Length: 576
Image 1: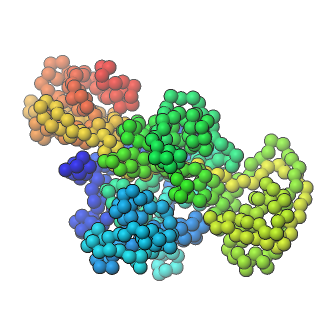
Image 2: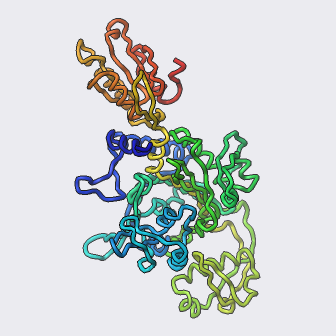
Image 3: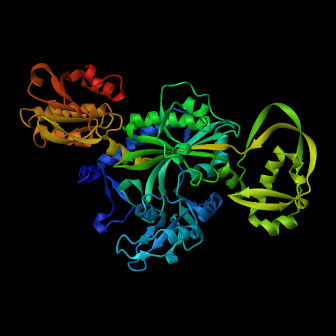
């Protein structure tokens, strides 16, 4: 068995995660978390909340997992949230075309292309069905939308969709959220919740799911805000930039300040969050020697993003994305500002009133309506924005306006701009967005893979999860050496008292003491307390540390306070 096979077997046997609905044959892409996994997941989410919400002074909200279809029409998910699907005409199994191409032609990285462009690739590279080995042709190639559709209410009155990301819930509620922020920028809004994507071919356990948990932060900033001043630090970020990828180079280890000064990272906010996140990954058990930040190549960069980096971890030779960091511009807010009835702009007061020339477009709607239809408001808004930056744009016979990657030509003669002098006390702006988006399930899988190993203790092989104390599902195991002479009664009282102190405790009296230690090592419990007969002589118990298997005697009266200090990091076991 491979390292990952052993880990997956442990995860199932010890209650971390397992395929859901196995009693009914299961369903690919859906996993259940058992007692250990649910506790680990909750601890990781709370750690993220402490670091990125409470620690940064941001808001946290919770929005519905179902939204009406106009939300996703505005966001672009209805029209552009697709993967390419290819099916076998013999066994009728469907596959994600780009993944199949990459797996069968390992030197080829399939770009995000259209059906037409992918057909050209198939003329050069043949594909075979992994199941029946039949040669696949392009006749079954199609775009497959990844959203789960549903109906809200009786009949088919209101079509809706399960959200494919938690971010849209934040963007949709922005007008109200900006009021809570009292109109001050920057401010951040976070959400931890479930998202859904109808993946064509879920694979590799928790790394590609149809139902998964995201922890997303949307930081709303002024369009001119380049980010905070980055304090010099010794933190070295492992950056795999576009230039290094193009030259088949290596990861560069640079400080955030160096990355900004060398124009490797284009925005100080991104550099800030890369450093903040690297420190968090380290604290929760990600092995930073098997970690990198990879910059998106031009052909994979979203059209609305000016820069994007993925946090990736190495597992069994594969690099897996666990977080995306993007500068999304004002794309999302501008879309909802155009398609909804609400105002998504923010009024930013000026320090002093100013006089300026204001351009009024006075468009010929007899031309714009029939020509551009529903895109008219967005096109006029874009022209208005362009005119505020350059009043000479109307001198050309035609204007070029780009919307969602498509360029539209507008006849200047159908605009009748006029200018007037106005006194301005502030400006209405659409904030830009910096987005760190964390995949909680993939982070859990990465932590388990990076902390799992096997060693020898007391001449016996053991499986060990060296989880940090802050996220371990169980913090302390409590055992009686024997289940007689009132040792079990004392141990149960100690366990109860420790639970009252807020510690996660497991009481176990089954099997030999060695087997009980091994069970706790296997689920990552950092400490174990054993009650033996010496307790009746001096009121002490044995405290054992997981990684080293070393033991010390501890006075029972000080046990609770000592364990709390070990958990919060104010004490270290090896200093005792």
